[in-house]
Image (cartoon, rainbow, N blue to C red; front, side, top):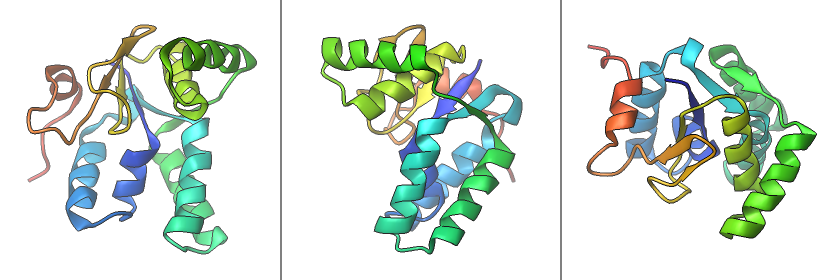
Length: 151
């Protein structure tokens, strides 16, 4: 099962917004197969902005974080087709355009899951189901995509 990561998962893993979420996000990404997980290009741009502005890291440090994530998981590009599909998605489903781009890109990349805290948990569109890994009852789909916990 192929999955895409949303910005909030990577931001938490980078330590933005506290240690508890960081530990959960780091456990999550450690359990995902690098061969079955992608990061939409939009996520890299959003993460850079969060790290440089909100976390007040230097731009070089933010860039290095992006490169580290790119080395961990494949990056998928935003195509013009995905952008126009995202505009329809944003219009038809009242989503923000940037979130719609991530969802449309995940669909175009053949993902079954989009791991995110920002969307409605369980939202299904274009063959992609959004799963929030921080709920008290994690999705069975997410659990099926994860490997065992490191001991």
